[in-house]
Image 1 (tube, rainbow, N blue to C red):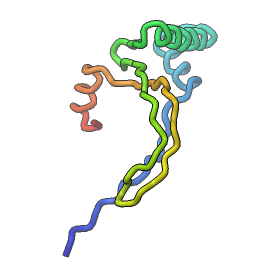
Image 2 (image 1 turned 180 degrees about the horizontal axis):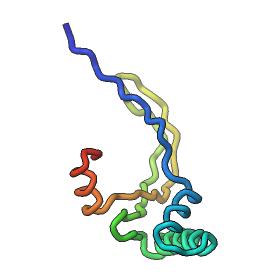
Image 3 (image 1 turned 90 degrees about the horizontal axis):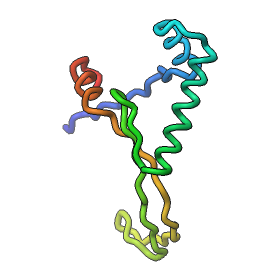
Length: 114
């Protein structure tokens, strides 16, 4: 008899919102809420500006965000799972991806979360 597959359960925990991140930073840095939210907004703006100009942005100790060009695809017929499928053409587009930095990976591996 074949072994049963384990079913992954969906996590019910949500990630921190912008306001929740601001509250944590207010408690740790002893600054006003308006300053922290302005800082988070300027960080997002800086990331967008850098990604447009250089295609790469790193938040030290957290992640590296990169852009890459995804090539255009031609229309036609393709063999998918043994069936011939008609596929539409798609234009080239820019894709944004984020990668955790090595220090964060090592930290999470030590705690058993990664």
